[in-house]
Amino acid sequence: MNQDSHYLQKPFITVGAVFEDNIGINDIINNTNNTELDYKGFCYTFKAEIDSDFKAGDYAVVHARNELKIVRTVQIHDAPKIDMNANFEYKWVVQKN
Image 1: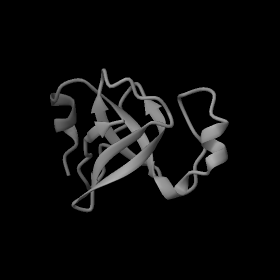
Image 2: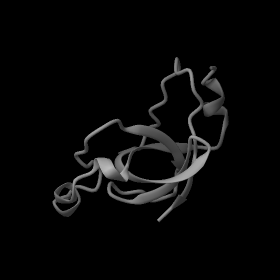
Image 3: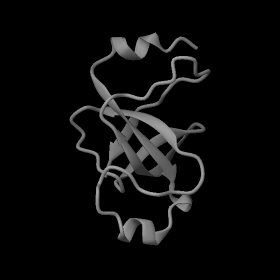
């Protein structure tokens, strides 16, 4: 899939997010830097509006497998992290908590 079209859209950031069952409660309680949480499992990258004011630990609603799912952000990327050779289309965050 051609990833060049991402850069033709309005400015955006990307966030790394995991589905809620992959984050331990201690990771949430002990978070102090608001830019990255420790997590287990796979971290998925989603596009977000540049002014969305995401912090690590925020909840978000995303499209996943043709459903709306709740994820927890664990990474905030001020410069978008887009794999130009990915064989999928990056999805937008639908709603931030």
